[in-house]
Amino acid sequence: MVRFVIVATAILLVAACGSGTTEVREPVDPTAAGNLRLGDELPDFELPTLDGGTLRLADYKTGDRYIVVVWHSPACPCANNCAIAVRDAMSGPEYEDVAWIGVASGPETQIDWWRDDLRAQLDEGIVTYPVGIDSDASVLKVYGTIRTPTVWLTDKEGKIRFWGAPESTLMPGADGYRILVKDAIDDMKADREVGIPRFDPIGCLIEGV
Image 1 (tube, rainbow, N blue to C red):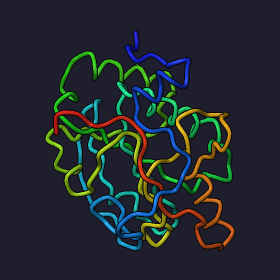
Image 2: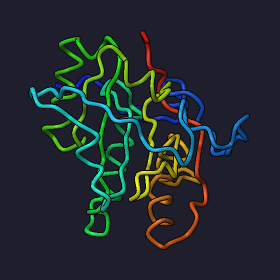
Image 3: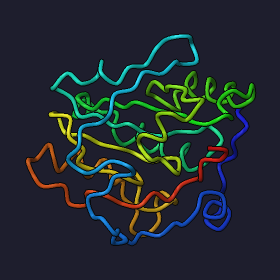
């Protein structure tokens, strides 16, 4: 049994996951993408997966795919809702050239119930992408991740074109709700500048790191 609970009210979900604002806040550095910068190449990493495999970012840098690195946690309802939204909105053939790569960080990744919940999400198709286990948070510290979900999106040349919250609000269907990472991919596919290249993360704080 998966232990996360999909919170039914906006009040409880915002309390669990943080601010649900749809405003784009001006950062001190408008090119900042966590510890990286828009236009940077994503740092490579190599992480184990639950099934004993190895997830290597370098394997996805083939020059013919957009890459999305997303921080995930099965204990975070925001990350769960995002995974479902991405699955439902971006599963068509027009997004076959988008590679999603999940990372889960921190000491809780070694807890049995946490690993069971992630395995259930993968088995049930809630999470449709591989997830690397960053138990010592070494990759998190390089990227500068604070919340789940947070995404880094690259163009096909491997340069970061979008960073931050993948959705504009925590409540799908609410006024102003948009899947920002999808919008950014659609902009690149249409040879447009990305309309919103960064949006401060609004999900669950990563604990214990």
